[in-house]
Image (tube, rainbow, N blue to C red; front, side, top):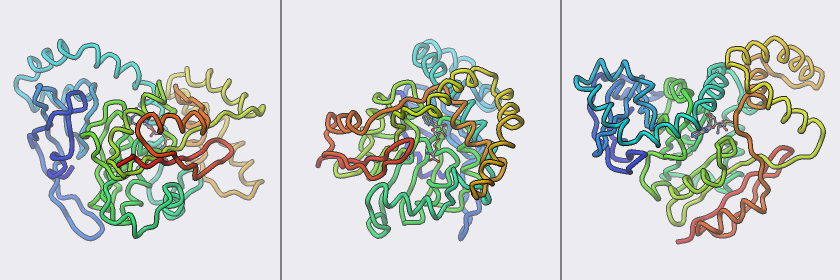
Amino acid sequence: MKEAIVDVLRCPLTRGKLTLEIYEKEEKKYSNQTISEVKSGLLVSPSGYLFPVVNGVPRLQAESFLEHDDFLRKHKKDYDVLKKKIVEEYDFVIKQAIKRNKKTKQSFGMEWSVFRHGSDTTWGFNKESRKERFLKEINSTAEELKGKKLFDVGCGNGVLTSGIAEFGMETFGIDVSNSVEKAYINNQNPSVHYVQGDLQLPPFASESFDIVYSTGVIHHTNNTELSFSCISELTKRGGKLYIWLYKPEKDFKHNALNFARSVTNKFPIKAQYWIFLILLVPQGLLKMRLRGIKRNWREQLINYFDVLSCEFRYEHTPEETEIWYLKRDFEKPVVTFVEYLGFGMYGVKKQ
Ligand SMILES: C[S@@+](CC[C@H](N)C(=O)[O-])C[C@H]1O[C@@H](n2cnc3c(N)ncnc32)[C@H](O)[C@@H]1O
């Protein structure tokens, strides 16, 4: 984590400015320079809320301090007293956050742990093809993006977040899962920042970003429109908000998969891994080969996790989503992608 981003980050609960205590620094190598960064530390909000920085990544979720209990106890002398105070004051918020994020973290955490940076594609797309698609999604040219600040909400493996920074943007990727750790390690661009965060409690001030971008994410939360509302706030006046969402389909395969998910997502996460790997990946790879599509076992396994593991997977129509934009002071949104499973849409926030 670069020290300078402390000015941009906010306490996700109170939106107060954070102060940084540094425990350990590291020399982080990027493609063309080395930067001295914070490897471990602590971000403290004015209310006394504690957010650890672990393995170079700020952990800015309501429940982060509980997940890094030992780390905090080691570094903060009076941690148990401080913890008691936080738990007493924010008990409800913490319990709600744990409840809504627990399974999503496990499922996507496992999904992205399989991904191999540098060699694997994300659903068949490599970095360059995702960058090309991104320009079409938000209806921009590379020149228009120079100097812009972008928030990639639910950044997953971070290949896109780091890739589109090559257009000359400063990009911030957050994800609820641990995927941000590998995204941080593999990032080669110093204009990219990764944070572990919950999009329903985003750790930034309102209207911070020229572009808020979220592909395939908010329908995986407990309430898609609420999530839309939370991220729409972060878009600057005159800025763009892009989302890609699943849409309803009526065919047999789609219904069968929805039913199958309602069973498979109840299994413990390690059992899901072995079931998908042993029972589904071999026949999936064979089908792909017969169709002439090149996929390796990890890419295939990630597909199965994506379809069969998540707790929440809602479907929406472009018509209902258009209303979400209009209600929140955006101009009439534009649909830029319609595909078998979903659609992509962007809107510009009124000046
Ligand atoms: C299908 S993946 C898409 C990843 C990425 N946008 C991409 O296109 O490669 C959905 C991602 O959303 C993340 N996610 C789900 N709920 C979230 C939340 N409440 N806050 C932040 N990220 C979330 C998941 O952890 C997962 O990495």
